[in-house]
Length: 348
Image (cartoon, rainbow, N blue to C red; front, side, top):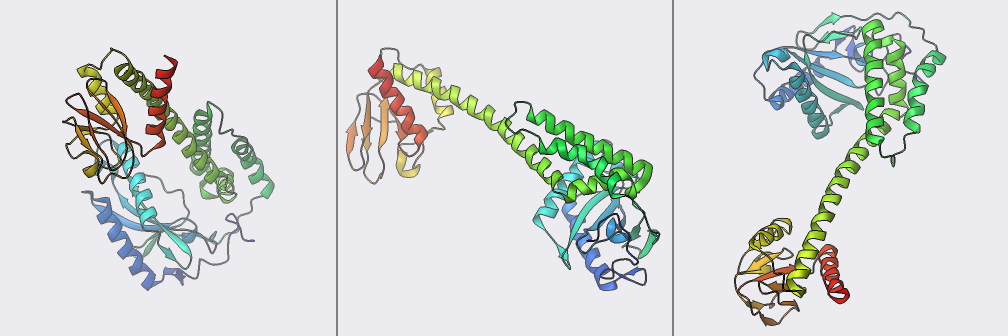
C-alpha cells in the first residue's frame, strides 16, 4: 500500500503532462477558483492561484486532495490578520461543504492563503501563470515507520482514552488539539512536509484519530451548550409551574410582571383567533368567550381571575375573567407542566 511518506517515480499522471498541468484541468481549476473568489466577497487583489500539497509533489496517492489556493494579502482586507484568517477558514469550510467537487475521485479543496504565509510544501505550481513556483524533485525520501509511529502513538493513545462523560472533556480535547497543532507547525517549520512531525500528523489523520478528535470536540461543545440550555429551561419551568399553581389554586394572583415573564418564556402571542391561526402555540385570547371548534387537540385555559379549564375539541367555553391564556396539549413539556400543576394542587 502506497503511503504519503513514500515518493513516487513521477508526478500524478492524472494531473501532469511532462511536468506541466493538463491544459483542460487547468482551465477547469481556474473556473472553480473564479467562483470561489466571488464567494469570498472581498475587496483584495488576487496575486496568484496555486496548486500545492501531495498532488504538486512526488508523494501523491490516488486519493490525495487537489489543494487549490487563492493567494492574496490578508492585510489588504483588514489590519487584524488573525480575524481575516479565521474568516477565510470559515469561508473555506462553507465552500468545501457546499461544493464537494472531485476530479477523478480526488477532492478539490479551496483555500484563500495569505501571501505572507511561508511555503512548507516542496512543490508549488502557479495555475494562474502556468509555471512552477517551487518545483519538487523525485529524490527518494527514506523515513522509518517506527519513527513515525513513535511520534504519533502518544497522541493516538490520548484520543482513544478520552472520556466523553468527563466533566472536563472539552478542556482535555482542546489541549490535545492545541498540542497537535503546535507539534505539526514545529515540524513543518523545521523540516517541511517530510518532517517526522508532519508525517505523524498524517498518520493520525489516515487512522481516523483526527476525525474522532474533531467529533469529540463537537459533542463536548454540544453537551456543554445543551446542559446550559436544559438547566436554564428547567429553572424557567419550575418558576412557571409555581407561579401558575399559585395563580390557579390560591389567592396569590399573577402580577403584570408575572404575565410578562410567562409570555416571554412560553413564547406567547396575543390573538383573538388563538389556535386557529397559531396551532400548537401558547396564545392569549383578549376575551372570555372561547370556542374549540376546528381545534383537534385539548387546550388548557386559565384566565386573569385564576379560573382554569381543560377544554376539549368542538366545544365552547365561557370564563369569568377578561382574557384567557391557552396552553395547547401538543407536547410532552406542556402536558407534564399541567400534570405538575394538578399534583401541586392535590398535595397542597
